[in-house]
Image 1 (cartoon, rainbow, N blue to C red):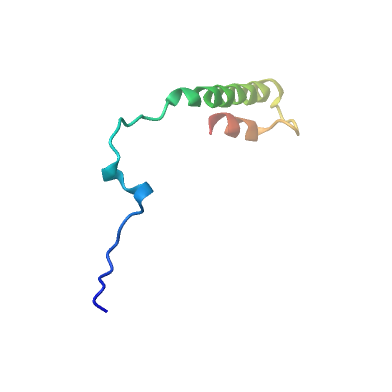
Image 2: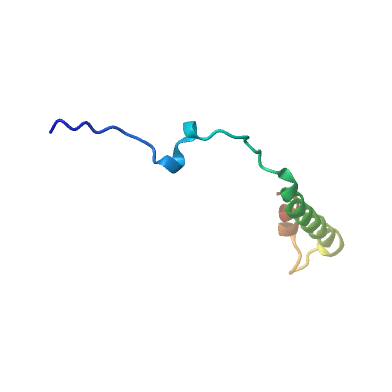
Amino acid sequence: MTDEHTDELPEDLDVSAYVGPYTFPDINRRRIPAAIYLAAAVGFFVLWLTRGDGGVLVNRGFVALAIG
């Protein structure tokens, strides 16, 4: 019972052994979803402006979607 238990990372998770450039995540891939969200928000706001006068299908929830 003289075996000592020590905590070690597996070899594939050991960062000290890896030497190489760190590449930062590319933010260009977020532009397409951002454009889709912006277009949807503008669409909801325009629908509320044009059809939001007491309608059943378009109501204040569309403004909440456009803002939030």
